[in-house]
Length: 563
Image (spheres, helix red, strand yellow):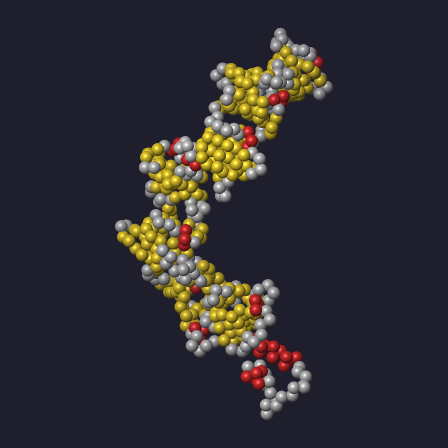
């Protein structure tokens, strides 16, 4: 009993008399349990009780922040007590010591606050400086949301009588807008006055970046600016971290006193990164932060590799480079810092095509490098895609690695490849397939067809037996063999063949071409039919065995002529 009394958990009856055999009621039990919790002599759910000091409380948005770093949402039913007395949420001040009780979801259902007469919460006069994020009205009361210069965000209300002091004169709260930097005075946690801060803007080049100091050079003058912890940094209209800023960045800084309160990264005059793509007049690099940027190449761009002037053709995807940009943001110089070519290009010396794939190459310096290969590696030879086991030792290849340094792409470099376009004027299928192609100048060339030729039409794979002599096509020749045939038009062309079937009722005929391939075509309404004498005839006059020329439109016959 003495211990209970000493810890103020309970007290005796008048005269300090106890009745140990008396039954206690629910109210007495509740008081006993409450005292145990409040004096932290019992804590059955430690994860649901937080103690600390209020740094910010926003009843409207339902958020309370503690100086110790915790930030919690307030439930709509949350109850507030100050020094043991029930109060409204507005009665809790910054600097008050609090005990927060959380529900199952981690939101605050009870705030028990204590205020020291010497603590910050007892000080009713407070000053905040920062950037206005939002201004809104609820009835006649105005609410102002600002991000303070130290990065914390607060929301406070102001009566409609408060005026805003701007360097150009006074204005009402309705004239205050997001984007302005202000200083606001508070009394009893409510805004009593607002002053718009006079800020200046400095544009220059970053020469040094430290955690709390930013050094920039502008117009030949060097300036050191203090950087608050929560400074706003923007790049391409998006918020980024302060760590994104690098030496040689061109920046625009909003300054108040000697503090940088907003930093906009305009561009990097000497960006560094890994080449992702080099296409025509543009270069795309990925910087150390993962950002991918594309730059236009100046007409007289200079490439420096190992101190020597080289050409754009000597650059490779994967090379680490530093770019120099002019005032138009065009690349005038490209310096290769680390070439990706020497280790990833070479002659295949060994292939492991079972289990975990592997490849060994020897580069131009005679050094050998062995890499593991992903199971679904892309292997390209010109425009053709190969299987990994189709590679051969002796092939010259370029490798690309994924983030784990496994090979995920292989390009065969030593192929004798060309592309031709024209009309297919001859085709032989079977065991020794051959193709004749007539170009736009009327010249005809014959080519052997590879056994594993890829044929396609409108993106779909087709067989040689589906190719019509007379079709327009694009072919790829590799090592004197046709390896791909892409049919670009077989519906608006002129073809020849022997009629092998005529169906008058359905107005269609079937022909067989010299390749042995057979095709069926319908007649267009009003189709013109001519015999070998040039006389007009009807479909029932057309006979099997005729050699004919067919002119097609949208895949239908609009003119038939017997040859």
